[in-house]
Length: 154
Image (cartoon, helix red, strand yellow):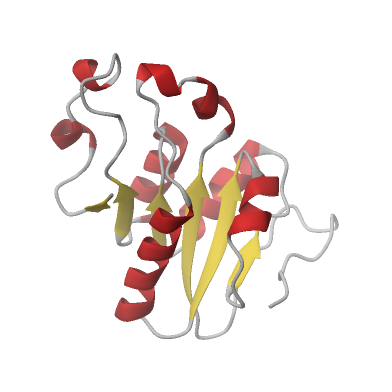
């Protein structure tokens, strides 16, 4: 599948595949890998597979759009015919892309959370964030953080 972003002549062109349901996956890794001891958890490829499988059950003709602060890992570990990767290096453009999608998959962090909230679609999130009984886990309440209609999977 080819990315439908057409160079730098356009500020931003939304990824659009005719008749496709656009699901953005925000995968935060980078700094969270260094904060694991505090409870900042990062899911592995199994979460990504399980989340994508849900959307493929709910919708036909799904395009997954990957936004991440570790695109090298994503390109190595998230490979499917219906996956495209954000071409942006500017977080504000990634955020605009994230919020313009029909639905969102959130791994960890507020960037993805706000993108999911603003997109207004169906959201699947990584329920292992934050790690229970950790510094962060003892200072947060997941039932306050995640809206009730969002779907958490481990």
